[in-house]
Length: 127
Image (cartoon, rainbow, N blue to C red; front, side, top):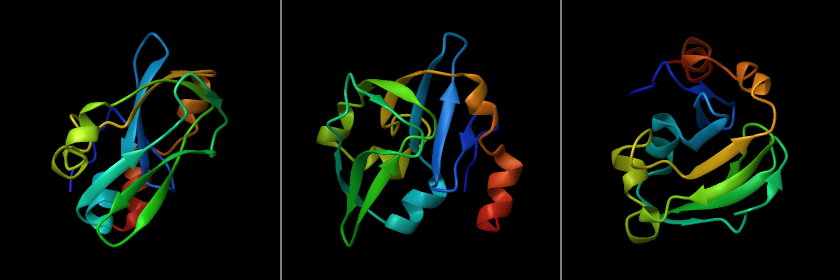
């Protein structure tokens, strides 16, 4: 399993990669996608909305289950990955690249530092 050093992680198995401009990308971790199995649908109606940290901003549906997506930090949802409409499997194939789920504008970039680093996340999942 892959866990990039340039991402922060949550107990809900989301990752966040923050750019210098306060814009970040969010997705689910390699561990989460492997636990869910083949993804068949990604849904969110949060574009343009400010969402608080730990609030649901969408769902991912796998063959056997549906799982809520929780926003790691307070932010405005700028964009959803439209490529996932046609191929939600990008999340399974490349969770930190083509499988990103949301592009967000982080309200408080310092809140990102409170998220787990890669070592802490590996400890959480025992990998």
